[in-house]
Amino acid sequence: MKKLILSFIIGFLLLLIFVLAMAPARIVLPWFTQGLPQLSLNQPSGSIWNASLDSISFQGKSIHNVSAQTGFWSLLLGNIHSDIQIDDQDLFLDGNVQLNSKQVSIKNTDYELEAGTILDWVRLPISELSGRFAGEIRELELAPNEIKKLEASGVWQRAVVGYPNSVLELGDIHFTIQRNDNGRALLTITENPGMLDLKGTLEVGFDKQYQLNLSTQTDLPENIKQWLTQLGRVENNRVIVKWNGRLP
Image (spheres, helix red, strand yellow):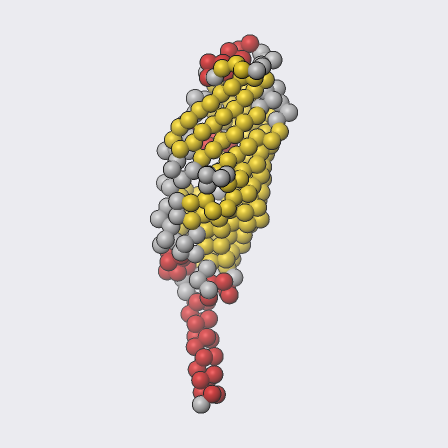
C-alpha cells in the first residue's frame, strides 16, 4: 500500500513537472499578476522557464523587449523567481525579480534610464532633460498601492536641463533612493560637483503626488541665477526651489 501511494505521488509530481515545463507563458504568466492591476504582461511567448514579453505596462507606461529565465522550485510555491533582462530603447535592467499574485520584489539589479523619459511622468517647468541614469536597485518590494521596501542608488551622468532659450549643464549628480517613514519613495542628492552645487530631495508615492525640494549656490552666472530665482527664492546664500505636483 505504501509503495502504491509513493508511486502515485512520484507519478503525480512527474506529470506536474511535465505540464509546467510545457506550459505556454501566455497562459501561465497572467495568473501571477491578477492581484496587481497596475501591472500588465503583454504578448508573452516561449515557455514559463524561458519567457519573452513584447512589453510590460505599469500605470499606462510600457517597457519593451523583456526576457526572463525562471527557477522551478519557486514556481511550485506560487512564485515566479527569475533572472530578468530588459533592453528597451530608454531602459536597461539586468537582475533578479520575484513575482506572485500579491507583490513584486526586485533585488541586486543594475539599471540604466534615459533622463528624457522623466518628462513623460513628471510635469516640470523645463523644456528638456538629457543624460542617463545608471545605478543599482539593492532591494525593491511593491504590493498593491504600497512600497514595502526600497533601497537603491545611482548617478545622473552628464545631466543637462533645458529652460527657455538656453540649457544648463549640471555635471554628474549622485543620489540614493529609499522608502521613508511615510511609505513613500525618497530620492536624495548626495553629491553634485558641478556649477550649481545642487542639493535636495524628490518624494513620490502611489498617490502620484510628488514634492521636489532643491537648492543651489548663489554664485552663478546672472542669466542662470535669474531663471532659478523666478522659480524659487534666495535664503541663507542658497537659491531654494520647491515644486509640488501630480504624476500623469
